[in-house]
Amino acid sequence: MIAQDYIISLTILASVRFLDMFSTWLASPSMTAELNPIVRKLGWNGWLWANIAICTIAALHNDFFLALTFLSCIAAGWNFWIWARYR
Image 1 (cartoon, helix red, strand yellow):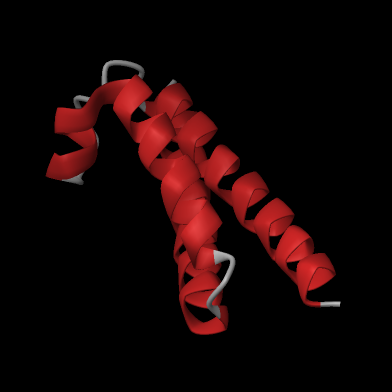
Image 2: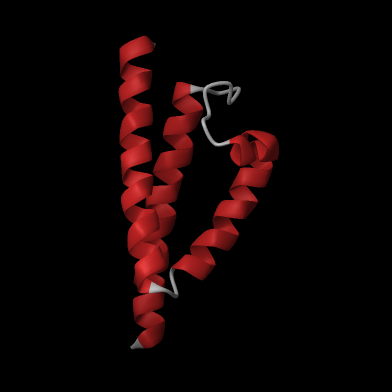
């Protein structure tokens, strides 16, 4: 049962993080508009590997999972809004 909960949490979190990354790529492919200086320094490849590590850890902890899912949804929505407004 615990493994099933982990897989569900990991799937949800990975999907939301993918939406955040995709919306960031749409809004700013060169990451010039990225507000997070760590992400800007990591670049796309580094950010991908960091997301994989963060998702595998965050899916184990409910509070971290919920906070990251919520914030990723907000960030993705904001990025999609910027992309739609300024494209």
